[in-house]
Length: 128
Image 1 (cartoon, helix red, strand yellow):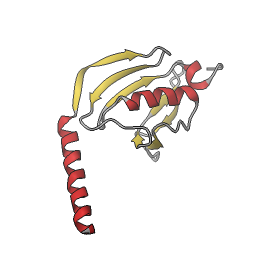
Image 2 (cartoon, helix red, strand yellow):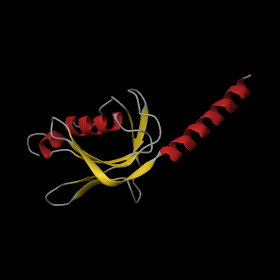
Image 3 (cartoon, one colour):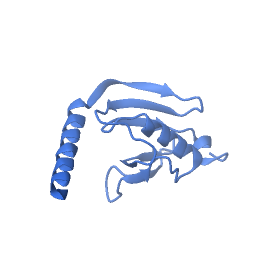
């Protein structure tokens, strides 16, 4: 009985992944959304999967740059850095970064891609 349950979950998961990939689409033009707190994000790819719920483990790639200097302070897209894994709702980083990333993740579907801009004072405090 246990083996049947495991096989059925694997089939279900593979079906979900194939549907997610089939329903994912790139946008020709990035669409900007501005939140009341000043966080902006641009929809680049609409995912075809489910939206995450609080408590779900999400894995994301991110690149953080300082606007004026262009200095990169985190980049998980290439090299030896691994993607960031976090539990949605846990807020392990500074207030603004978590608020922006969490809001954007909460409204995304699996397979989607967005560019997020968090204002310096919100992401890193009064010193920007």
